[in-house]
Length: 331
Ligand code: 2P0
Image 1 (cartoon, rainbow, N blue to C red):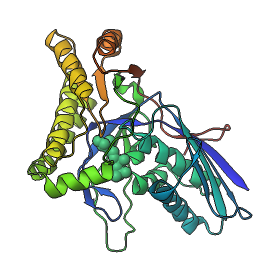
Image 2 (spheres, helix red, strand yellow; image 1 turned 135 degrees about the horizontal axis):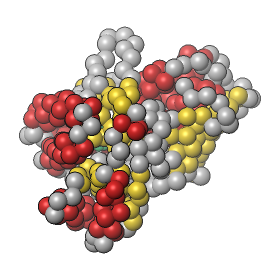
Image 3 (cartoon, rainbow, N blue to C red; image 1 turned 135 degrees about the vertical axis):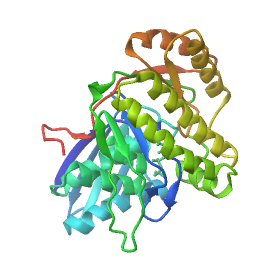
């Protein structure tokens, strides 16, 4: 039996990925740039054993079934396809935050799973290879392999499906101090998964074309602002990216926003109207992420905690990429 345990955090995209080039191979149609969070953690243990009867997958204490199980088994099969006969796997994965509600648990989940599976299989892959493996399961997971500010380019599958597409670090965590205040508005899982929401947006939204044109432009400007350490421009462009993504999705009937989401958005925009540099980001769920400078974080947090429909606020800084526990080196 060989095993490895990995930790990974979610990330929040400043410039959003929304839309696949082609469902085959899971290649994003637009580039994205994210911050990896310092809190909210997935911990995943993978064991391979020739005596194991099949794969046993425990997510959050419950045996995974259906699509959730299938997505994990597909990743394990890719690893087995390279490493050879490893036998069955036992996967035990837990989050210290709500799963499947737009808190990017698939990002931290598949990042931790990819790293733990690769190492348990004895493969000596670098972070870029682990990131490509994670992307095939969940594109945002490719970014959680790295810490700090991370970019995932758009990509195109080739006929043989051997094209690699990995995220890469753009700047370290200390490049631009940012507090990400996550206003949690529900504990429930989201009604429309990201894959389905993206597909519906590209197929049905009258604004799909506008999104696909605008997203790379916002991304390039945001990347420049980040490299220039221009916090206000980064925040402003991040809010524009989130609003453009949701505008295109809403027009296709894909609505992740709730009343509480709009209340929190209103709070952030009112704070900004009073002179505070704070900006909003929203992913495929009803939570709102406020982007602030650390000196302003307490004020933003208090305002969000006083907002109707906000259950609690998690203050996350910029953190590390996926890593092994048990004293082993990171990829
Ligand atoms: C992102 N999201 O850039 C965007 C913004 C949600 C909104 O990536 O289908 O779980 O597994 O590749 O990565 C969430 O979708 O999608 C996501 P799949 P994923 O963070």
